[in-house]
Image 1 (cartoon, rainbow, N blue to C red):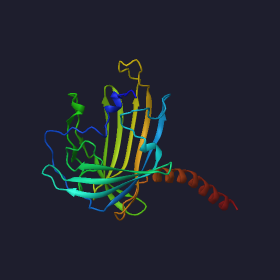
Image 2: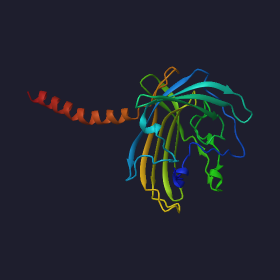
Image 3: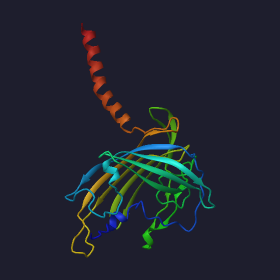
Image 4: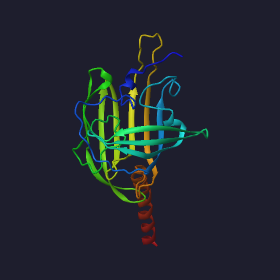
Length: 260
């Protein structure tokens, strides 16, 4: 099978290629062995003449983000390290076809981590979550990323302090947008949104990679951590829509009663 290398999606937070910065700042681990987190991952937009994820696709998207009902992360070990403790997760994928598969994922809780699936606990606005790093050894330095703000976020179970990381980046003239929500107490990512518009790319193989536009969303839907749940961003929007519809009806009803 001929391998296709998707250079520009490679270019985006390739969730598999980690090149550590020269210096790493250790961060506080906010989870414990046995903690589990249930996610739903969905590709909410795919605009392309290309079938979703061709053979040997390498990039910001995975089949799991479009073909699973749930993805479970369970903390199995926490290993102390001088430059950052390593949190090991057993990951369970519940596929839409009824099958289940497993994987092991390690996260180094420090600014050396480029994946930033989790960050340090109790971080605040202005703190660095990931230092600059040489992207895939190309000499292009991915910029450092910092927490934009800390907000009080009300989810269906509780109000929890949440760290927000939001940034846009252009790689090889292709724009990408990212929004991350992290639970402050645990450092776990509770919501993730990423959008990109990738043009057709010719790798010199005679078979160019077709253009595509995508949006992907991850969100926590359950957890063993008390009060931790998906930050339902649709709630405020639906509330405003409901208010916009309800208020004129209420006013009209009052006017009719006044005229009687």
